[in-house]
Image 1 (cartoon, one colour):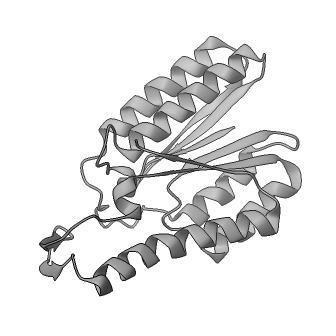
Image 2 (cartoon, rainbow, N blue to C red):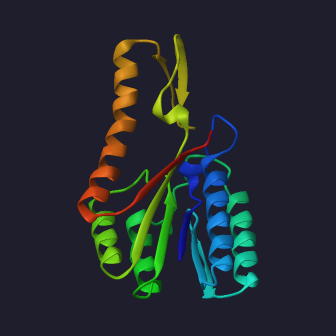
Length: 203
């Protein structure tokens, strides 16, 4: 079972491709590998306001359906900032749904940037881990890790705009600490639950 994140925060990339595209590539590789291994393949592709399921089956049609769904969901992305909506669900809610679909013994791969990983997600991962063979795959962009800027930058969230001294030591430390803090949360959860964590950058 592949759980593939195609939500707004993945619509970002500074080199080669966006995180959403990298997540789709990884899912495609895993899908073909599953077919080659004679496994049944199922998937949940997560969008901001909807999700699409690929029913588990052992056929090339399951892989092709997944590729079509990934393509469709990827093309719905237009901004790294999600439009406010009552139908939008957090990752924690999506993981509860994954637990419903994942039968005991299933190999589950969750592909995401995990930007909204929280305590509720941790509980859902714990529940999934009890009955499945769970692997987390984190996608990220090098620019999220380190901002090599030596000047003042204009930053915007699409609504407000501010000017920051991105070359200052204080800003650089805060920027790096934000990324490191999120990664430490993911790694701590994986250590506690005994989960494999694979990390791939867009470069």
